[in-house]
Length: 203
Length: 255
Image (cartoon, rainbow over the protein chains, first blue to last red):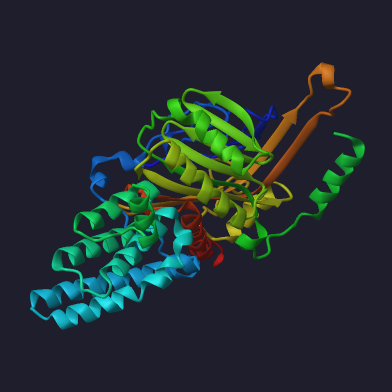
């Protein structure tokens, strides 16, 4: 059974003022599970029931659209990032389809179109350090390719990382590092050229 | 209560509406706003509570410790409270002490730090609870105002051998899907404060004997399906939740 978000409840035992509502709640008396609340945010009295703990909901996940359903409530960075990431995922998918159809020219065009989205995506890095890290690694990877088209395995990895970023734009820097490794593992160079040069010069 | 304060109290009471003209959410005051996350038991609270609160205190130096127990730690800044427990974290703001913009920013930083220090990967539940209050002159006025909303059907004839019409009405609806839910409660309520100061401080404080009647609107908007930490920015989620609440509670006042 669902419980409610915990509040500071009347009567507030922490205040020292006995305030009684006509619901006849006496100090310390527990309410039914439906309205289980802490009597004061200072007290540890009522167990917190997690309605998400039922086995039926464990396999479900909320998507970005379900979590953020109000179009007018988006921050500019968030909505821009989602729009551009949708485009980028689509373009990487079309590049993969083109490779599957042996059309390297279309694949290359789609990848170039994907690449031009990155600077604007980088402007959305206020979403979090993780977001900035991944977009930065894409930019570095494309710079290192120096105009060459990534191979199928690399585009597949790019597509996967873009999809993950679209679903989890607020990911942490640690999670982002894992994704940077995914790009590195397929032979892309996701680190800024200056950093690579600096590290190799210090060896 | 000092005499002048009591006079002010009486004036306020006499200025309260005698009838129940049309009203909507804008005429309510936001008494309490709670932004909460719940997560699988985070035993790292026992290791990292100090580091977590030090990081939070770097952002808001004015907060001070209220309670620190193994299962629960809480800090406070005036009418804003911050709580981190083994399975939940929340920000509580009373009497609109912080604007929603401030709360969104606080929520973004507070929950990000909590997830980082407690090494969370999943939220079981996100919740936003808003409790509004609109005061009326007395219990009957509150009941009459509630009646004017047309939310429930009351018997018009004498019942239980009582001539008077019902008071303290309550209306509750819950919407729930597999992924999200909302609980809306609207009720006419009378609150009584009866407080006498301890004898040693009776010279400083006056007794308070007061009754407040009004309508309480309590809205709890929450998620049911788990969400991954990387999906959530609590400031952003709060803005979306507020938008839905203000849009979809209008029906309560459309009678």
